[in-house]
Image 1 (cartoon, helix red, strand yellow):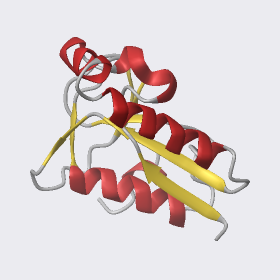
Image 2 (tube, rainbow, N blue to C red):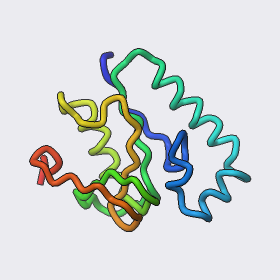
Image 3 (cartoon, rainbow, N blue to C red):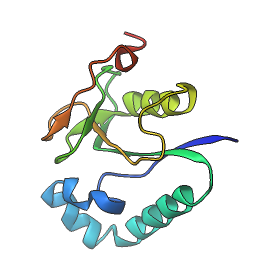
Length: 126
């Protein structure tokens, strides 16, 4: 194995401020142990010696894929599970994937401070 792509959550690691307020309250209370595990997972992956992408999606939906996947700097919106899966597959299969060694927060709908990737690589499969 050379490259690894894992899914944690918006709010894990250094993305706490990207979680919506209500979700932050859950993270600090009923989901506290879950986020300890997610943070440990991120540390293990980052220190694994592998090429990696730690994917932090916004709120997950079960809708059909949209093909809209934005890496965001601000508060997260929502994203379909299928779009998260596509981003993870791209992280493994695209040789020069731009988020290797990073932990991008991704969202399709809503959120703030989006960095929209309109390059040809971002539109693969459209």
